[in-house]
Image (cartoon, rainbow, N blue to C red; front, side, top):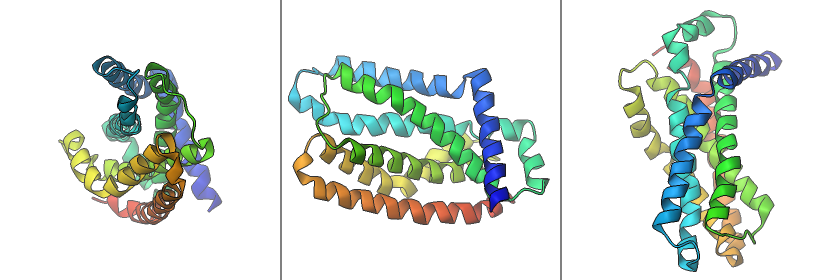
Length: 227
């Protein structure tokens, strides 16, 4: 178990260091997030209270599509340089490859969220009055669930010529429960805080989803590498 986590952190560290040098993935994700925020801030009147109802959806539109940009590149460098084959034939547990990629992708998306969510609140003149710990839990759980399944499917589609097109087709039907739960919980915590009990139910659903799918992806990733 210790070797699994040690190898996973080494792989995640490699991806983070590579991104630190190139700044390709996070920069692309931030540009996309910025374009979405600026476009919607000009398209709608931020002073209109009714418009603020779109903020929960915007948070997850930015998160989902920014994450897909990162997921599409997650295994690109590995397949181009045959690094993935080297990791497969190495004595490390194949699950550590998946875990390392999940950690790196999760950090990339969190960086985008740390910039984009405050920017979204500022441009829409939105004052956060909800339960911040629960809001943070929703963001973390929703992002982790999306990334854990997305990383698995990115590895599955990495050898396909049309991997960038194939990934969203495979991904959206599977992650639709976590997306719905995240949007609903975010809406309640930002706009309809009186229904906080419903938000907690959605958070519990997200926790169960994450546990089931993360374990499945971790166990099955070894067979994905053989495809």
